[in-house]
Length: 82
Image (cartoon, rainbow, N blue to C red; front, side, top):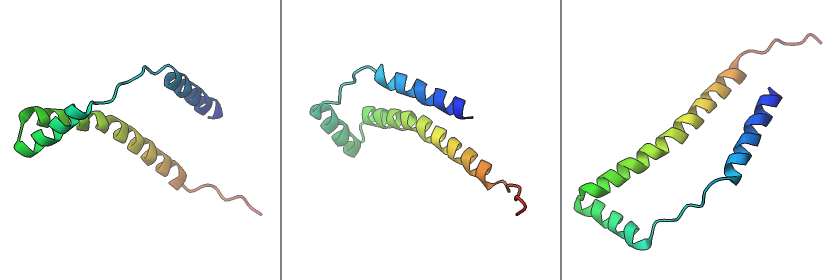
């Protein structure tokens, strides 16, 4: 179990070191997106749907890990005789 966790941690570290540089959204684009949402612009609805779909995967992954972790530690452990 420790080897698997160590391997996952190592792979995660390598992936974060080799991550490409990302550029932030410019102020003009973010203002247009905010104002489009107020005016009912369809492009803004598409941007919002895209952001929500990109956020869904990490939340589902972390939720699944949390559920598995909870179930594993919820199981009764055999008590050791003293």
